[in-house]
Image 1 (spheres, rainbow, N blue to C red):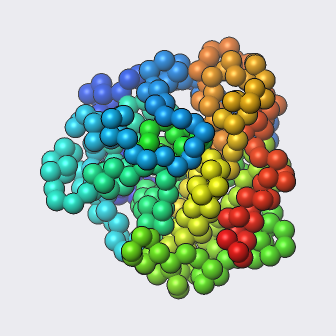
Image 2: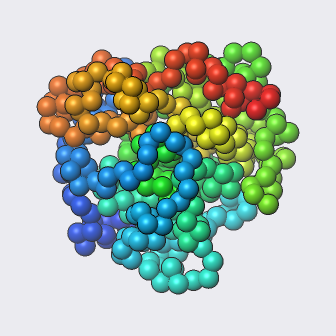
Length: 369
């Protein structure tokens, strides 16, 4: 499949910044291999990310924390890191992306900026920062969840109606789930291979949780504004992955459903987890029409001394793309020895227990949520 317009813009501008030497290391030189086995875990040796990535500057035990202007935030990024401002229309049927860089910061209002990630995981790793001048903390709301899915749609997904290669996914990490900057941002990067979570089978959640969520159950507010079309956006189904090392929810648009419906369900779940101090990660694939929600407890287990020493020694902090099955490894010996069983054992340390997972399911998707 060909590239979408936005996909082409992102790739061209990202490669321009690579040619200018604006990244902390050359990610194209990182070795990558698919681990043998049915899951298809992807392992990458990225020693530069271990030594040159910006350190976390806040506590990992609270999902909701106020924005702190004294710490690093994206208004402190170099002007050359800005690629363009992204603006989707109210129905997500059209998007304008302008390729002017730093001058966009001078426009009235607070634009949604797309910047390079100077410590990339893979090719064309960029960051979407909603309303950058508003200095939003790392927390999801209905409008920012919708913006992220619109960004995924315009990048192009394999089952979306738009053109696109389907190789871009959009990710999100909450605080406590290995977000390193408390300034609202989403990740996106280009990986042609299917992610293991995308290949895993699914099954319905039990009982009433298995029913697709009607539009009337979905939240209609984003602050003072209504989410456009939320009352008639169509149905969404919620399932779970089967046989995957991390217990995970999958939120999918049924035929005829709009992105607003998916965004409303995702935002509802995120709001519940944020209120309950439950860390989580998100991957949006298929042009934003299929969203994986990963509630996790790895940092909690680290703090409790429950993670085996040999896994701690790897230095891997499983965030959205790692949990999705793209393992960014920091040591050559781990990359050389990694196999599917090792990857599954690493990721299983992220997962909630079955009892806690179902508690989160009822909290996020139950009729009383």
